[in-house]
Image (cartoon, rainbow, N blue to C red; front, side, top):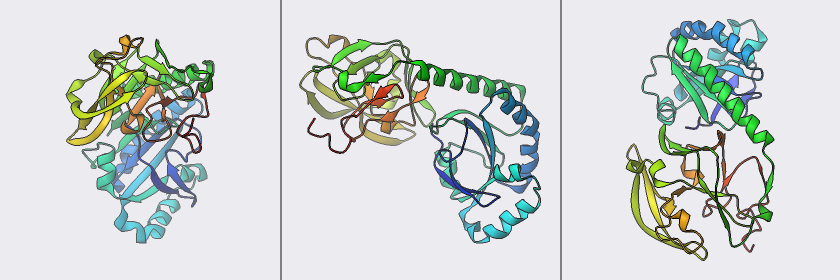
Length: 314
């Protein structure tokens, strides 16, 4: 799940858009919805300070979140908060949000605004951990584990050799790889595997396919839509239905692939833009430019990529 873009202002007056506009990271973001939530935030304070010391580069941000109807009174409300916080660093790490709380709760699958909500968010906005209410030994252990796992995936990405997509072949190559793929929507894991198939074609980032037994088919509905690839053959499509919301034709597969691509049969690929979480080895991917293309861009790739402006004739 992705943390939604949220415009906030710290108590020193600087405007940010979280999570992308925050320095450092990963971040723990604490959403508080009532004045009395401050006592709950205080219960987490020493534990989160210790967490940040154990994981250099991490930061903690408190986000008092009020209904957008209070925006007219922001000056006096924020001024009152600022007057009660003498430490400049604490003021910089206190970010007020005046927003549609119903929409925010829906985006983050929050069922209860009567307690605080905590999120560990990486630099791409992916939510790696969440908790609510009072701290517990288990929640703190899982926070440490999620932070360590995030650091490990970033280290793997930084040491992996760069691949130039211009060097990929045409006709495209097919290969099964030892990489961790995860696809999720609204907290529901749609696909997860340690051995996806990659299709590598000149100027395209890899398209990843997951074997059907590693896909949760309860979320997929067959679509009448088809398309044709000159190399792989006729593709059939799935629509994705999660929590009653349907996204049409966002997954596809080849029931009878062309010679040379037989291993691809019935494996499912997804458009990254349709997913809240689309990760390779823990890294949130970027969708290939151009809504039609299905490649997943990771930090170990060098472009340019087909789909960018001026590339349609490639």
